[in-house]
Image (cartoon, rainbow, N blue to C red):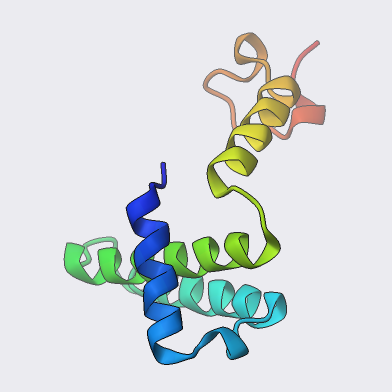
Length: 108
């Protein structure tokens, strides 16, 4: 999912601008939510949105997610893989396929 170049470029951007002082976990989490709101705003009135607008906002969300993971000292790829393992256990494919029900509402 992510790669070393992305991480290196983000680190360089932050260092060059002395922005780490503003990057507390709390501030980064707030920024994720703010940028996610801007991503959602692209679709507010129509599902037909210029791709460039969506990609720009999605990049902002991903950027802050990467920065937050780095600040917390976690590997963003690994935490996603770990969460996928937990989700697979809660939503077995044979019970969840084609369904949007919450795990505790799936058939036995």
